[in-house]
Amino acid sequence: MLDEWAERGSPLLIDGELVTCDERFETLDPATEEVIGTAADATLGHLDTAIAAARRAFDGWAADLPLRVRCLRQLREALVRHADELRELTVREVGAPRFLTYGAQLDAPVADLGWFADLAETYAWTRDLGRAAPMGMVSERRLLREPVGVVGAITPWNFPHQINLAKLGPALAAGNTVVLKPAPDTPWCAAALGRLLTEETDTPPGVVNIVTGRDHALGARLATDPRVDLVSFTGSTATGREVMRGAAENLKKVFLELGGKSAFIVLDDADLRTACSYAAFTGITHAGQGCAITSRLLVPRARHDEAVEITAHTMAKLGARDPSDDRTVCGPVISARQRDRIEGYLKLAAEEGGSFATGGHRSDRDKGFWIEPTLITGLTNRSRAAREEIFGPVLVILPHDGDDDAVRLANDSPYGLSGAVHGGDVERARAVARRLRTGTVSVNGGIWYAADVPFGGYKQSGVGREMGVAGFEEYLETKVIAEGG
Ligand code: NAD
Image (tube, rainbow, N blue to C red; front, top):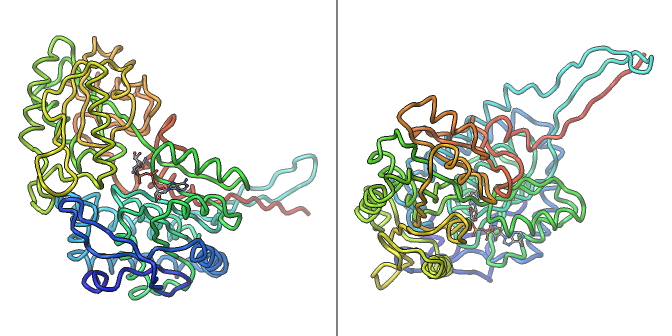
């Protein structure tokens, strides 16, 4: 697949056909800037045809639950069969450290497809609400859950398989048809799904359409097109706002997974070395390019300097390394644009009075997009570097004056996506976790990511939940039929 695309470019998937385009754009290896190959650069005309196909396919797909379950399982099996090739692709196109492809960058979301197939099979699609006599009229009431219709799925580049599949899985299981518009930085990860869906599953034409393109206008059109019933968007908060504005035109449903600036709280009874080493490791995993990454480290004031030393030491030791090496935690950032944006924040942090305990600059390499793991000290939680999402291997460390102060600082953020608490007394750590205004919290290293766990944000981190039963139900309408007589 990949050798062929390197020569001819990856195709779109529209109405069951793999469509190659004369217009193409390059996809790069962010570690080396080497051009891996090209991808079809869709026009608004392609998008229009894709939406029309999804509309036509909807009724048949919505009515055939066994087919949906079969196709999802076939897709999972096809992805497993091609795992080696997809692993190479993910390391090269995303710059993802290889170890992550055994988890959230590939294997985990592939396995999750099976969970959505099982859920669709066992889900209570109808529920008897019983007999009642509202306003004196005896009525038999029944509740039905039905697919919403055509889903416009718009996704970012940082965890492309996870995010593409976390939308396709529940949307298809629920009976919707989908037009997927991936980020311009990772077209091949999405195109691979198109290829496998067409060649290795029984998915009918039009049920899934995949439209790669370099122009963000494709996403904007998907958000506004009146034939799309629900927009499922993952990306930055700024673009999420645009999507919501666009969807307001015809009041379509919106589901938004957005940015974060999550806090990692170290309580004063925690093992400081364990907690800070773990904060360093999680903070720079995949070069910090994860929406739920804890990028503000809150440590007890009395042990601040010690915490800085441990964290900086671990970050420097892990370093920014070749993503194809199994031991690498922090690889390159996705693009020159992201690298420059992160550098802009490092400059801003220095202007705001911050210092760098380690890093603070791009890596000393000729090629590729690299930022050295960076720990910023000396800022307050009011500084922009501590409030805004940097999306790089950059942690801001801040002192706190006890549990109440740590909770106050953690919650003093426009975001509310995730968080972490480390403490010796688990009851106390749990109590702090309960007070955080975020969608997920890890206590003492607990991992919340799983197919059955709803994920999403409070405040400006999003609207709705992805994954879990709650995530599946985002893709359903609720209907009630009442029979008289
Ligand atoms: P982005 O917002 O720039 O782009 C995301 C997607 O939206 C891309 O496919 C892009 O082409 C498309 N898009 C751009 N402008 C659009 C518009 N006006 N209308 C519709 N679509 C448009 O985000 P990104 O840089 O690709 O990804 C990084 C961001 O994503 C970070 O802020 C990160 O926190 C967030 N993110 C959130 C989650 C989550 O689940 N909460 C997960 C991963 C990434």
